[in-house]
Length: 265
Image (cartoon, rainbow, N blue to C red; front, side, top):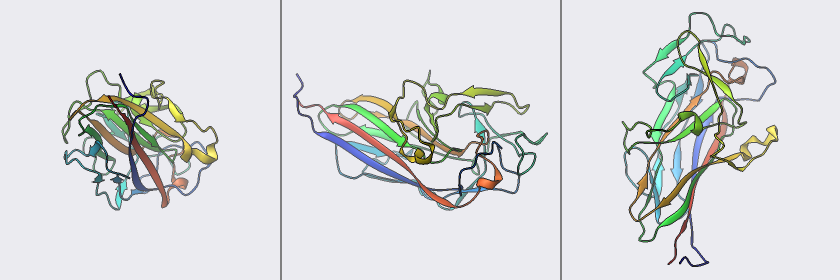
């Protein structure tokens, strides 16, 4: 039987991004014009204390400190419904709500569009750790973060079989949007958070979206067991807030927290 008291295992991670937002607006224009870019600078994951849970990126170097080493990276808006096929486009004008005809393109070289890596969790202790949860908050509307169960660890790992990429996409306002799925403009409606990944702290006040915290249920990790997740960070061109007037250099934080309960026999 499990003892009533359990030692809490906490890994608190801070991922710092310089996101291109100056202020929110009530306009509904999507996509940037061709001359506008956004800047992401620095993703660092740190642990607040040593514990039986360790983390790694896709290099599988486990420990209590992970540096993604992203600095001054320029990102252009992009859109994807499945994490595999990505599409770009230009706005018809800086204040246009439509795509510019003929600009939708399939993108395979994603270096200027998507930050891709992994965030993996491993139990190095003798006792099992249950209720392992990855929690995150996303502070800006057209920024997207996806933490998707992976088939394995490493830079070439695909997502786990039977996993819906859309179920693991997170943003600040939890609104549905329509991701591009082809160069002809066909799109697929996506809900940004599946009901299975319920909000831990749902805040409907748009002025305080940074407090929105969402969770991914990792489950129980036995001794030496690891679970792998692909990490994607991008600016979603189909989001209504992704338009020229929101380009800038505001520093915002993505907070990622991994927690679990050590089972005491």
